[in-house]
Every structure is written in structure tokens, then in C-alpha cells.
Length: 382
Image (cartoon, rainbow, N blue to C red; front, side):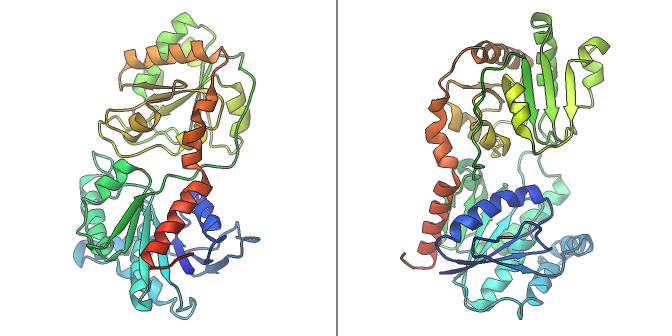
């Protein structure tokens, strides 16, 4: 089988997840990759042809927004795909578009190419599109929904990164009776982190803190913890856009216990120091998003405190784990959960309970599901 995978490089962090699946598919099929700018990390050694084409510029993206509002099509994305007709082959069995909420070009261009080549079109969405429950501003919500209703109905396969997200996505468009859909969990990194018990009372949050992820509950809970554990520390590593009230909550002396670091790829040293890892979901019930950091967290032998709403992917996936403490969106719940986690983290814990879940998130497992689904879509056998 021959597969053409399309994704964007803007927001390159997301493309790491795509690459894990692409390399897994390349062990079973011929895979070409089409990106909108030159990919620095080539697919050398994977037998993958990395097609480079002209960049999809911010100006083109802006014109796409205008066109989808006015004529219901991403005309610039389709034009971009049209210009590639002499670059790509014509013998693909399936075009796989990998998309996120801010990266819809691969969906439109993939739909265009699949139609022209008379092959199947598969969509893998790592986000719910458009993001519900206030994630997406009303005006943007409308045009993203219009884009979904334009291009998703033509798809032969749609996958989302958890069951809650898939259930939501299937309500946003009228799909073919033959549509195949499935859950493709965000594939985890290969690294497993094993460290001795930390002697420092450090709570660690990594990644981006923005949008509906409300930090106030965490900050107020940590302020209370400082009254009991005067040596406690709270470290943020990444883009923390929602810490505006930090100086209003803490005194000058208390503020010294909080460290804000820039994004780093060297998480190992931070994991080694931390006693408890913090995850924060959107301040909503029934939120379909699962934070990408949790995929890494579960591979670290550290207690995890997950602040989440009710009827969320986190509640469902981690309910049976003793080493993941789930808290509501309120200060009391977080304070109690963080205190419990701190106490448990100072003793030996059975982190092996996470192994079945880690296996579900493994690149091999997720890649196998995608491969078997694509075989079904293309009516092929191995």
C-alpha cells in the first residue's frame, strides 16, 4: 500500500506526534510525506520520501479564513494542493491528513488531492474541531465548523485522539454511511523516566498553560500548602500565559517559592527533582481534550495530580490508578489532592500499575490500530 501523509510544520511540537505514527506506518507501507515547509528533521533511515514544497504563508492562511467565510471553501489550500500535481505521484491508495485546531490546511488540500487521484481520504485530528465549550471564540468557531462541514463529509476515515473527542467530532458533520472512525491516542515518547524518590517537595507543571486552563485553584492550593510545608516549591516549565494573578495571590516571600522556566526539551532533570507532577484540564465539565503532557507524565515514576472536570477523558482513563490523584476545579479539592500526593510520593509506590495504559499509548499500539484501519478503508489485506 502507498500512503501520502500531509501535515503542517507551524506549531512544530504537534508534528512530533505525527512523525511517530508516520515512521510506524513506514514499516508496513510505502509512505510519502508532504509538508508546507522544509522539515529539518528528515525521515532518514525510515524509507520515507519527504516532499518539500513552497511554504503555506500566514497571508495564505488569512485568505483561507476569508474564503471559508464567504464561499465555504479553503481556496488557498486547494490551490496549494493543485500546484503540487506534478510533484506528487498518482498511485496512492490513501491520503492521510493530520490536523489540529489551527492547522486545517492539510484537511482541505488532502481532500482535494484524494478526489483528484480517486483514492481514499483519511483524517486524523489531534484536537476537537472546532474546540467546544469556550475553547474557540464564537466568530472563529463558526468558520472552523464551516470548514469541517465542507471537507469532513468527503472523508472515508476520521480518527480523534480520545473517545470523548471522537464522539463530539462525529456530531459536527454529516458523514458517509460507510465512514470508518476510531480513536488514535496521542502516541507517547519512547523514553521512560525512573528516578530515586525526590528529597525536595517540588510540584512541577510542564507545557503550555493557556485558554480555559485556570491556574487560580492551583496557586491558591499551593499558598495553603506553604503553611504546612514551608520548603515546598512550585515550578512551571513552558509557556505560562495564565499566571496574571500570581503577584496578587502571594506575598513577596511566598513568591520566592515559585519558579517559572522557559520551554525546555531537558525535562529529565526537572522530573528527577520533582515529587509531584501537575496536570490541569480546562475549567469545564465534559471537556473532550486530554492534555498531551499526561502522555509523558505516566512514564515518569512520580505521583500525578490531575485537575479535571467531570465526564472527561482524564476521569475515564485514570480512574483506576492509585498513583494518579484526580481533583475537581476548586482550591479545597486540589489542596487535599496535592497534600495526599506529597505524602504518597515520599514512599515507594507501585508505578507498574500504569503499564497497561502506557501500552495503549505506545507508538506501536497506536500505529497498529491506524494501519489496520487504513487496510479496511482501502479494502486491502496485509
